[in-house]
Image 1: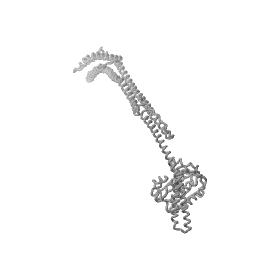
Image 2 (image 1 turned 90 degrees about the horizontal axis):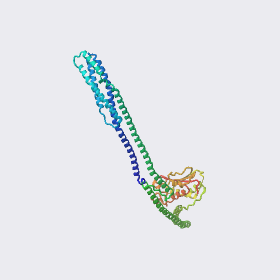
Image 3 (image 1 turned 45 degrees about the horizontal axis):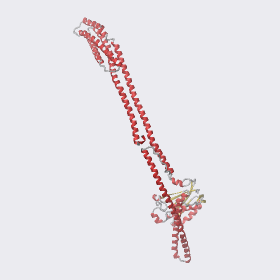
Image 4 (image 1 turned 30 degrees about the vertical axis):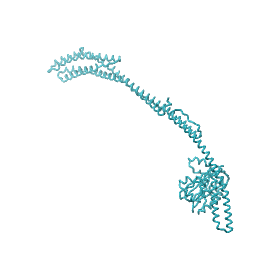
Length: 548
């Protein structure tokens, strides 16, 4: 059931469950506290009020006795009428306050608690006895006091009132009020103690409610953690599996691999899409493989055709060049000087066409993989001498100066000497062609540095040899130079810098492509730096010891 839910539904249900647990816990804590605290609050308020009134009643009773004694003493002094009046007023106020307090104690709420009911019953009995004794004492007291309120009192009347008041204090009315003090104090203590107990219960209920909330938060946090781990696993584990399958398919090209579909949610749909994509890639790869085989076969056929055609074309060209040279010599011997310019043009055109055919033959051999290396040890300075001897006429043709910069004892090299010579002659020929009245340098040095190849160019790193030493041949000219855009295409076969270059300088556009392929076959690399109208620098990095 849970597996059929979508990722959003799973997350939504998870959030809902956690929030539901939190709401249930908080609601339970609130209802529990409300259920138990409300009656406690009501009873606490009643008990505190009754205890306060009983405490006030006890104090009023003590004050009544104190005021009686003060009034008796004041009556002995007939001259201090003001003090007698104050004593009478204090007693009357005392009695009034006690009556009010007794009136407050008569308000007894209903209860089902037997213990509280007994205390309420005792409170009613105590209040009734208080009222009976006060009602018995108050009228007699008022009757006596009225005598003192007459004008022109003589000492004898005050002495009589004093004796009567003393007798009243000793009579059954007032003397029976004082014993109620201890009962009042005991009842007050019971109400106060119950109030304190209610406060403790109140605090315990609050603590219990807080515990419910804490437990709820812990449970909801645990549920949230479990759901997060569970849902995270439901998402992460299939994704990890898909990543591993994708990486394995990418590395091993095993298109039979399929990621397991473990659910019908978005992850399951994504897994099915990945499996479908793998199948489609397998189909396209198979189609591309077939197309590649066809293209390679066509390329091989083209290379074979070019090689055969090159051989077929070179044979008559060599004959034409040979016969034109013979005719040139005989014309010079016979004095037919008018034929010499035409014969020279035939020779020049034939040799140019033969060089173009040779280039086509070389590139076709390279593309067909028919290049064989003939490795040998040879002095580098001898190679430089041969190259300079051949390239000097090419440089002088455009009024250029060819210079060499190399150490005298530059050592030997283990490589295919004709192919290294061909690379250098191609570069020097290009430099001579695109430079007029300038200087061309051939700079040779031995170094332990690695070729300047970008670290992210894995293809080039795989092509070059891992050598400890390299020979670097740099061909620098002061010719027309190239733009950055032209530099992107110069090593492509049959392509020159631009169309105007082909029209102006001629050529097939194969020389640099052949040189680059030969460098790679020898385990080296060729780089170029150029600025428009400033010249170019071609650098050939070849291992000192080429591996066969």
